[in-house]
Image (cartoon, rainbow over all chains, first blue to last red):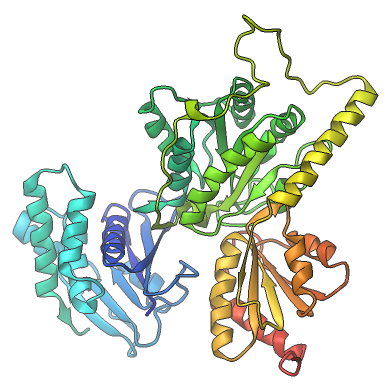
Length: 182
Length: 356
C-alpha cells in the first residue's frame, strides 16, 4: 500500500530530520522508501518541507500531488498543504503554533501541543519535531515506535546519551498525548 | 542505506577509483561537490579542488586524465554550457572523464527545478566538432550508484568523456541504495598513453591540434569508428509491460518514473500500455524501438522539455509507427495522474482498444 506523507513547517523546526527519521525507520522495516526534500532558495525562518513515500511495491513518483498524510508544524504549512490532502487523508497538527481551523470535513485531524510539551518537559523547543513524529506514528501506525527509536540511534550515533534520552522521551510524549479531533 | 542521489554518485565515484574531482558550485548539485570535499579529504591519494570556474574545473579534469587518474567534475545546466570546450578537447584527445549534469530549467540561468532540456547538448556533442560523449540517464538511487561505476569503466575502455544526466529530483531524492565495493585504482590496468614522466621511455604527446587536414580527417574517422563500436556494445534500456502493448511510452530519468506510475494506473483501467526507458541516451536504444514497432503502431514520447529525444525516436522509427509527444519544460514535474490522462486520451482517440 503506497502512502505519501508531507512534513512541513518553518526552517529550523527540524522537519527534514523528522522525515528522514521516518524514512530510515520504514526502510529498516523492509519497505520501499523515497525521501524528497524541498530545496533551493529558501531563507532562514522560511518554509521547509519534505515528502516521504512508503510502499510495499516499487515507488514511481516521489512527488505527492495529493498526500495521504501531512504533519504540519505551523500556520503557513497548513494553508499550503491542507487543500492538497487526499480525500480521507490524515493531518497531524502542532496545536501550539497552528491556531487556524482546518476547512476540510473529509479528513481526520490529530493535534499535538508540541511546543508546550517541549517547554514543559525539557525547557527547550528543539525536540518539537520528535514529539510531532511520535504523534504521527501513533496516529498512523506507519512504522513501530521501536523502529523510530532504532533510526534515532542509527542517525545520531555518537551523540550524548542524555540527548538520546530526551529524544526517546519526546517520541513517547508525542505518541501518548496526540489527540484526535479538530 | 538511505542516501541522497548526489551523495550516491559522489561516494560511488570514489569507490570506483575516482581520485580527482574539480567543481564549481551551482544549485541543485552542490551536495555532490560538498560530499566530495569531505570524502576525498579522507582518501590519501585523492585531490579535491573547488575551482575558480566551471571552465577551470573541466580543464583540471582534462589535465588529471592526462596523468592517468580517474577524474570527475559535476555541474548543472548553465555550468555544462561553460564546460563544452573542455569536453570537446577531451573527446578530441581521447581522454577518459566522467561529467555529471544535474539538469535544471533553462535556457539561460533558468531555474533550479528538475528539467530535461539538455538532451541535445549531452547526446549530440554539445561542444564543437564531430564527436559524441557517452550519455547515461539513471532513474533511481541504485542506478545512480551502478551507472557511476559503469561510467568510469566506459570512460577508460573507450577513452571518452561520459556524461551522467540527472536532474534536481534525482540528485536531491533519497532512496535505499547498496553502494558498490571500493576498488583500488592502482589495481586498474596501466594506461599506455598517459603523461607520467618520460624517464626510461620515449616522450609522448597528447594534443587536439592536428593541422594536417589528412591527419585530421583520419582522426575524425577513427573517432567515428569508436562511436560505432560504442553503439554496438553499450546500449542499455528497460522495458516495462511492453509485451502486449498497443501503445508504448518512451521516457528517461525522472520522466520515466512518472510515466511508469501513469502506466500502472491505466493498466488498472485495462489499457494495454508499456514503457521503454532508454538508460543509455548515447548510444540510443534504436534497435529496441524498431523491434517494438513490428507490433506497436503508436509511441508516446514524454519529456520534461519541449521535445528533444522525440527526434531520436522518429529517426529510429523512420516512419514505421506514429510518434506522439507530450512535454512539460521549465522545471514542471508532472504527476502520474496527469500523464495517465494524456495516455488514456491518446489511447481512446486513436481507437487502440479495437487494435489487437
